[in-house]
Length: 233
Image (cartoon, rainbow, N blue to C red; front, side, top):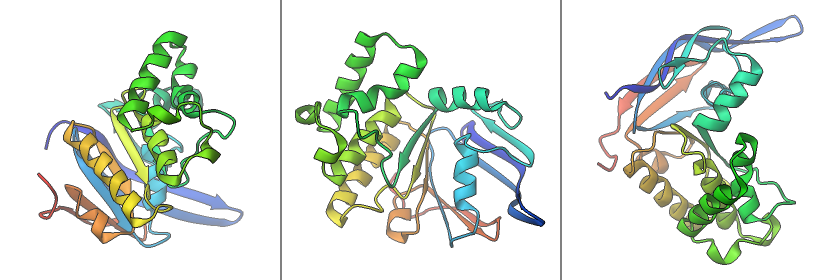
């Protein structure tokens, strides 16, 4: 395996709900190499969503360690995690999570605004990514004026605008018809072919076959972590 972008070491995540303590992750170890495409699968409540939140620096480990690109982030403050998220991680959500008041270009530019990137540079980068996603004729449109596939393309462009070292996708085709979903998966395949490190949560075995590796969760533990022989080279 190449040098890991993601490395979890004996990672534990617990939630306290009143007098009840729930263990969502039970001391897992996981390494995902640079440029790897991994799919995470498991039943509802198995721990896969908790994993994605932790990898995305949206939550803290209860114990153990998480190294992102070789940097331990397990004990960083919320402000420090926010900085990591904005610069090093790209998110693609099932529900797109676009800002309805902003147009296509403005939605793509949002992460750059928080980094203080000059307006002209931000506009150039956003326009280039919009063009790549086939959205050059939709730049001034608001999300409600776009199809689901177009909204997801905006979300993918936004996830790329800061050139992240890790891309996280949570059921990215869940709200799309099969044809549009296939087009989005083809885009993700292209990003992987260009060297992006991708971790995707899905329940769809057909989607899982596109990845290099499939990690299966059950009751907060990894029960299989295997290279996918059916994956594209």
